[in-house]
Length: 306
Figure 1 (cartoon, one colour):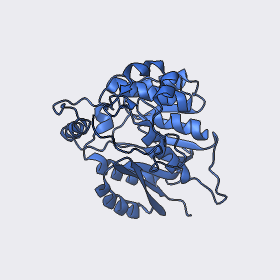
Figure 2 (tube, helix red, strand yellow):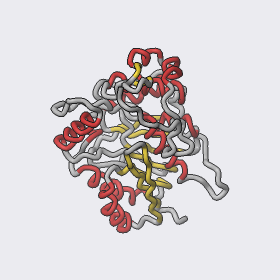
Figure 3 (tube, rainbow, N blue to C red):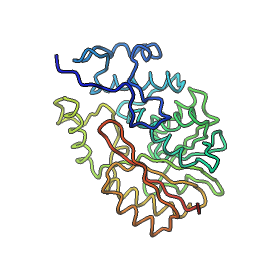
Figure 4 (tube, rainbow, N blue to C red):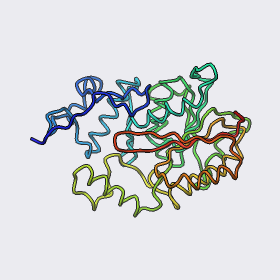
């Protein structure tokens, strides 16, 4: 048997309000979602776990987490779409919420807080978590018709249509335009941008992840967390997407209090900082997040005087 590493019961790197700071409790999760039980077995260290290289197992785990922690009874995504790691997505929501803390130290909750999720995806994860945790209202934009329909199905199946709505983005060259309506106000915008610059780069990233999971599938473009082309890559990659977002955000300076986006690559930040200076952002924050060995960050900016 391999030598077992000491794993802390609590994941201290997660945000203090993150419900997933503790290790997965598979007996409880299988109660919440019985189909997960098929994929749970002892790992080489004799701990209960799943094969994280199996997309069906990951999907069942997500169903269980959403049911147990966020009261989402029905959740499903079409085959091949991004099946995101929920603990990491929850971290983004909580750190973004911190941007809204007022001078009284209180987090604003309720439907009057409106959040825009750029590229909501078929999974609709950010609105599901944010609505449950803080009671916020969400608008999710989505360019893919099938993803838009899948997200809408999740919303309707769980009775959340009063809180979450989906708007189709018709142009790949636009981010906020035709999504934010005239005189509409948002407290936050959030985004998990495609971070690869080509299909080839996305495939290479997939191969590395398979290798890290101990699977010999370098030749495959399948991934345990899935992901369609628009979810994984765009021309120019993460940097070009974010620069376009920053430039366009200036035209909606009065519509959104805080613009935010995940930034996967640290080297992307320098160009973003220069762009934010050019468009006249009043305040810029970079929030580092750590989930295990992975380090990512949230870039946040506002045109509102502090």
